Image 1: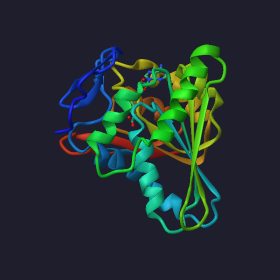
Image 2 (image 1 turned 30 degrees about the vertical axis):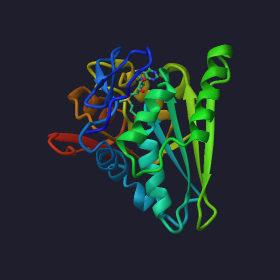
Image 3 (image 1 turned 60 degrees about the horizontal axis):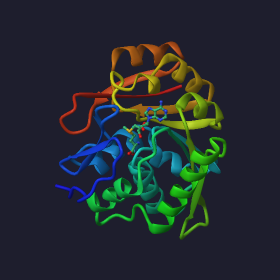
Image 4 (image 1 turned 90 degrees about the vertical axis):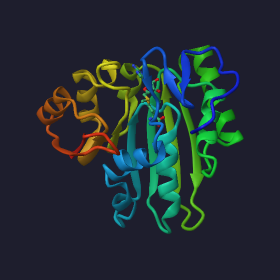
Length: 246
Ligand SMILES: C[S@@+](CC[C@H](N)C(=O)[O-])C[C@H]1O[C@@H](n2cnc3c(N)ncnc32)[C@H](O)[C@@H]1O
């Protein structure tokens, strides 16, 4: 079980079994059992990211995430990209309205001590972007990048800071979506028809999506917007998740 930090900062987060829980949304950031594996199963495998990284005719793969949170999906995707000898470049575009503080983010490193997650430099860079955003309310894009050791391709992270209604319209065209708000009943803005319509507008032909939720309204709305929606077995004890293609 991951350790709980001694002095959790005074934000709307509490810890259950070492996993951050949002008091505002009454939901967890990632699963306490196998969060890393779950993220890989639901989002990386659900979007067939590995075969996309291998596409010889693609120069950059654009991945869009709704809900940056602890950065776990970023790190799982980055890990996958690093494991390839000759991957395409990646632009991982996300958004976050309620950024977690340094103390909370660093608990992710304690949960996964064998992985290379929040480095000092990465945390500093995120904190700087957050403080500029809080001061100006305008400069709301955080960027960071990693170069590949073998083939010189690049993994670029872009996180828009602010509410989804403000951030999502700024996304570039996307080829794979990670729909990762808190559960729809607790976080309706991340799953609303307005949100899905913008997501659809920002999708390239053949775009994929994946999410842990298989809520009926979500399946119907995605289908109406033109996505072919498939149900599949959820991770671990979860019965179902959905993924699909435009
Ligand atoms: C389940 S968490 C995301 C987990 C994340 N992908 C990870 O790897 O840790 C959902 C995230 O969506 C953010 N969020 C919820 N409602 C939002 C809104 N209206 N605008 C922007 N971000 C929002 C929350 O702050 C939270 O970080």
